[in-house]
Image (cartoon, rainbow, N blue to C red):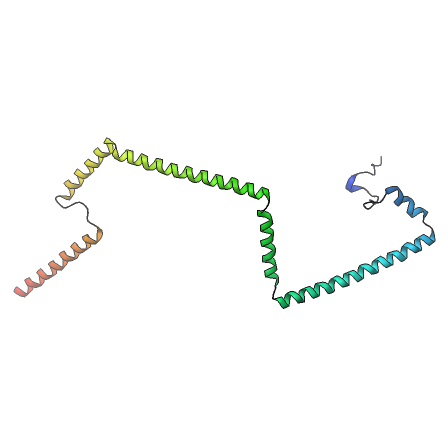
Length: 184
């Protein structure tokens, strides 16, 4: 059983160009006279020659364009930057980009507000805990324990004060030892 010839991309027959009639293409190749074929060959050669000429003119124009750009100091990196800038401007002017940008902006504002409110709630909760009777009782117990362990020393003092007092104590001990040796 032979598969049908009309299978989209798998078709083996040629597809006529836009504007061509499929029936006319098939009958034209079969019914052309020798004179008509010769005329078409001449026209084909003429069109190919015109295409070659246009290609040469285009190459000359591109060379001239490159020379003008070189004289103006325009290089390919600057052109690339200009193309990217223009493309970005084209993108940012589309309604889809504007809508997306507005949506993201609104989402960012909502997220910022949410984080801000979460932070203030946490701060309020910490303040509530600090002001609670249980925490105050615990704080008092810690203070009492510190005063029992530390004796009558004032609570606090930074690291620098501790170092200074230790240095003064060792300097006093050294002077006392020297004086004892001199008296003996």
